[in-house]
View 1 (cartoon, rainbow, N blue to C red):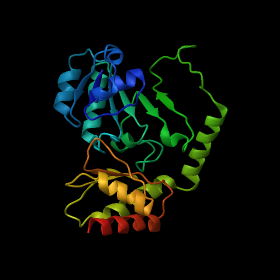
View 2: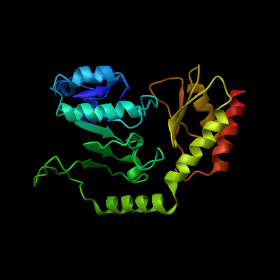
View 3: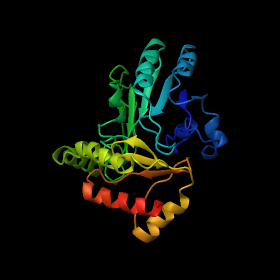
Length: 260
């Protein structure tokens, strides 16, 4: 398989094999199958690898989460789709963190107007209830008994997911994610020491210093929980899709005061 550097695809056996962090993987995992890694948005490296014709799949995240909110460009994703088609390779999009409206579209890769062969999803799918799923292209022939799982088809999980889908539509939460993205970016646009990253409400602020102490202070003094990543200088911002402008600006004001 081919994957992207700084990726994170989970902690099950095959998932850690395509995750670019050897510390998470036991020798048993590393012996499963061969994996090569390329830089995000390096179309030349992608072409050089896939043109060999011996990769079964190319996997990447719609927006990198743990890796630091780097995003595949539209041109890179479109090129990936073309090269995968030309070389009999499946295009797999991991939308577990960036899916279900988090980016302002249902899946982040939809910004590039490409279709994946497999799409993995979880997290926001159940709004906290443990549920996950995979979308598979019809060109992969299904066979009875091919897919099975102890908890597959769980009725409570399905009810939770249906409720999430209905709420996304009824409360226009994807539209809200897009609107709040612009509110957030406008609030920090004039701070020269900060780089704003991400899409929708999968956002981050990259500083010139480690954010560990800042994160601790936000939690202990203001009860505001932020996320970390493999980039020690990145503060990840992942609020509820229903967050209001007033709530978001309240956070922005607190953070600006701490930075000053």
